Length: 165
Image 1 (cartoon, helix red, strand yellow):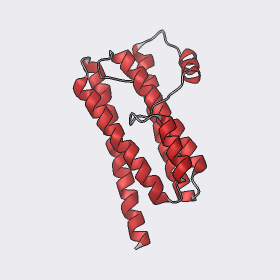
Image 2 (image 1 turned 180 degrees about the horizontal axis):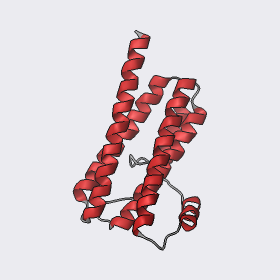
Image 3 (image 1 turned 60 degrees about the horizontal axis):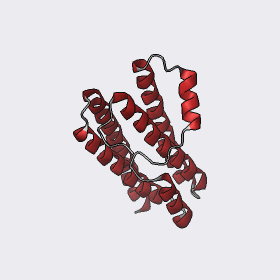
Image 4 (image 1 turned 30 degrees about the vertical axis):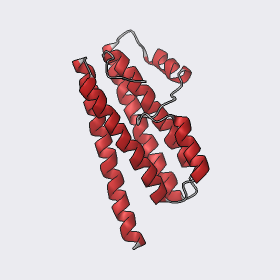
């Protein structure tokens, strides 16, 4: 698990794996959600996490020139991602989905807001603890991305509250 003491390349790998774990969880949650709007919310979040993975891969390959696209894809395919960006083990979140089946979009939003809020807190902590100034920049960028996710989810929640009133 990431500590903030990593150098830039180590930080990028750790962040990539957490984004991958979150992407996999959101894809799984989308498939298990029983309401179409909840499925769509999780699918959209999975797409965002994939874009984060692509961004991190681009940064890593730009810095580490000998790491080609093919070898990075092999790394991605071989490497498990046991944690989400929130620092929550994927298996724990999957167990929550199994146990409490997300029945509607409000349930999906509640769970997604928890994940994205914890992700922000984790990246914030890593930003504060980072010793490598370049890793600090990466953590700050990821914090800003999480803020965008939370803002999007808040707007969706307000929209849903108006619909259900």
